[in-house]
Amino acid sequence: MTTTRGHCLIINSYSFRNAGDAAIMLATKQLLESEGAASVTLSSRYDDSSDYSRFGLRVVPEIVPFPAEGARLSRAARAVYGLAASLLVIAGAAVSRSFARILARALLPRTSRITRTTDTVVIAGGGYMYSSKRRLNLSLYQSLVSIRLGDALTGSTLMMPQSIGPVTRPFDRWLIQWSLRHTTVVVREKLSLAASTVPLQLPARDVDDVAFFYTAQTTADAVSDVCRIVAMDWRWSTSVNQVAFEEYVLRVAEIATRVHELGLRVVLGGHSSLPEHKQDDILVAKMISARLSFPHEVDENTDVAHLYDEYARSRVVVGTRLHACIMAISVGTPAISLQYQEKSRGVLRRLGLDRYVHRVDELDVNEIVSQVGEIAAAEERWSDVAEKTRSAIAGAYREICS
Image (cartoon, rainbow, N blue to C red; front, side):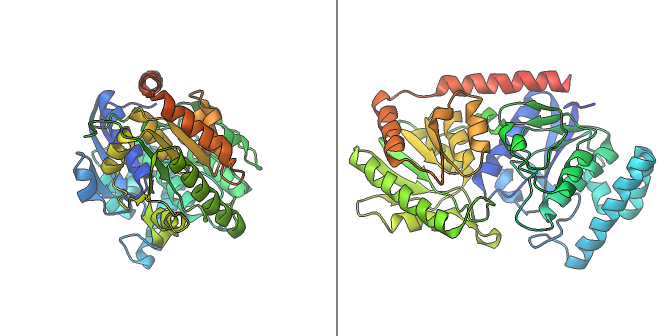
């Protein structure tokens, strides 16, 4: 059973330093509170307290310490904690939730303190339930053990819409199905699930990405003739090689040049600057900038509130990051997606906008520039799309939580 009455703990989030993940967390908080949650707390492996506190969101440590770099405990402590958590959720599944709670107090005092006042564990994130390039997907394992542990300790889990897949390994499939067996599975699109080469037997409800729900308080006073191009460091993806990435940089530079010729001002930016994760969108934006010979701007600020303001001021956003498009649409700005994974087409197809989605490795510069020109000439906002999507999300969660 799921409910948003009482105290909610959001788990499986990523860093505030990725604006898309921050948008998901802020939207999740807003949705839960609109449906009656007494409090919302974020459990994160990052120390994002000062950033999220600006938005009234409390941050506590993760309930299962992350097993790799970036966590706040020593490597040995994380290994011991992860093993204990794994044994505990297995024992809880085999015996009872009451037994799991008793064991948790003895084996996982840190987790017990975090979850003591939690009524509902909320599973939130973007698309972490997929098979990565690594043979052992530690991020997936930590997330799924956290879900089962949260369910064992509270008896109530609520899933936010996200992508599942593509899954290519039987072990990853088994983990995902095992972790979600007591949860109403909610996906934001089904193309990623369908792309799995190892089929998942998951009855899932599809609901629009929760980030659409957030009502940003922007300071934008007027729309300017800006085309904001959001680059992405997507070299970590299973779908990329160096040749494809270099071609992407060249094609986006060509798009920027042609957009400038339309009379629009070009601003390059990104969502995430996390070199330790091999993700630095700003570095990629600068690669594109180096190929441009006309006046333009590179915005290095990836703060989520700043980006909401800038998207609201823009005439059109061209984004490789899916949440660049989602954030733009949520403030009424038309968006064109340069997709590196099927999730972008899946999400925008639900809104009837899949004509504005283009594969990142097959970019047709003429078509994209033509769409930018049409949008700029029409000067229409997509506010109705945003309002309808927010209404649909709220309706879906009233049904799920009842």
